[in-house]
Length: 204
Image (cartoon, helix red, strand yellow):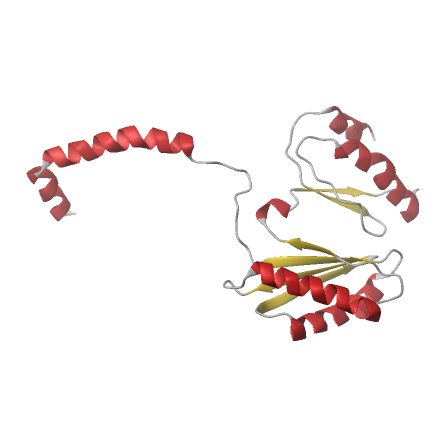
């Protein structure tokens, strides 16, 4: 600290020039720096979503997710750990990789093994949805529907056929299909703006 003060006293013009440069370049850098509500964060994670309508959560965990995780650990390289969640008709597997992994190669391996294991899965199951995980795919709002008078099927129909189409046109939103049992849920990625669809949601 004292050495810096001595240099400043010995060479005042140098520090004056540096101060002027900071004053001029600082606002320019602030204006040109790109900003985003979801910055591009490189996270080596791949999400695999299995769907099988009507399959209970226990069967999804035992007949689909468990077998799929065993195949992943034996065929895909550089896996750090695997996390999974089983719901009614839906199974979600998150594959966490080592920081130095080539995510393109990892995605190709996961896609390949996902197609290969289909013959060992329950009959009629469709190939999974495979997503590279990043900050922009994190839901910022979850909408849950429940009713004391409506059954699970009617709740699902209301969410899928009435509420979801009304919200799909909200600017900046991405709304997947609802899921769940007694409580139907949406994972909603949304840029909040006042809109008619939100008025419809409150009335509904």
